[in-house]
Image (cartoon, rainbow, N blue to C red; front, side, top):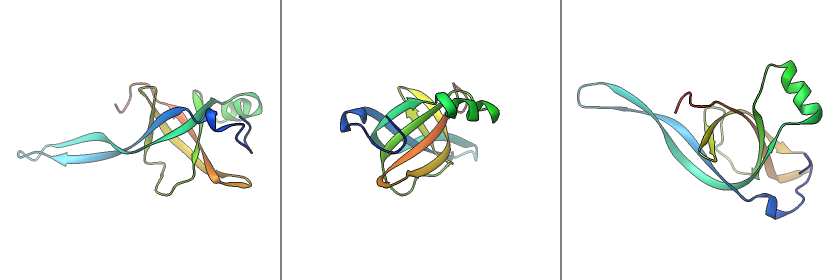
Length: 115
């Protein structure tokens, strides 16, 4: 998939779960933080490669994946994406140039931290 156009709707075959960090307090006053599903969408996933990879390496960002979804409001960098049961920290959100109906989200795989 190129950055400026979707090749086919078939590329948007992955379920992406967007989560927010919520805090709850129990009866004893202890606060527990958990990731809660905000919404789930279909999207495309692509590892960063080529020029993007070298730019990412220069910024010390490994394990970067670009997710493409239909544009929607409410997505912030405070959220994370769960993709194939793996958590990704949202780093950058942008509308695709000349394709206002889609957006790209660059996210870093964070392994088991924050799960």
